[in-house]
Image 1: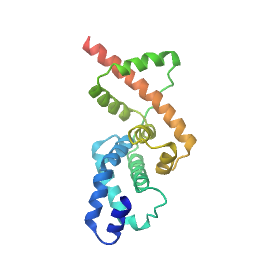
Image 2: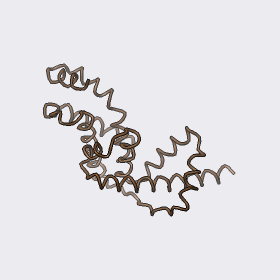
Image 3: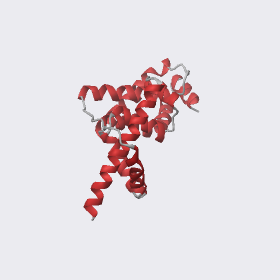
Image 4: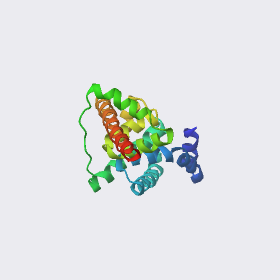
Length: 185
């Protein structure tokens, strides 16, 4: 379906681009948020990314899916902005396996709405690379190979980042849960 819209855009139908914006804006925002962790900057990035995609659409060769090509633009723009603003992120230490079961149980106790809130808050606290890989892998259900195409990173690097991201996300969620538990009781 994307090919039809792309062809129409290249033939001069500027309204066809709205269809691509509607289809990809939410995931583009999610990708940008995972890197810059700021709503204003994320919106700025997706607007700029759509402009770049529109301007460079004639160079899209179709070797990959349009979404992969576009998400790569979003990823590159996100890291450029993050680098300009030099946001610092903290890496957490690996959690011992004996604590892992306790952490998993704590996460399961959260209500569904609370889970979404806390997961988004936790994603803001981990590194941009980790947050991006988690969002692409779990939310967008991209394979490691597709994430490689989007980011330009090696598959082994993505697997390492994904592993560390899971650990750090668990650690943060456990801390949030413990704080919440203290406040409630």
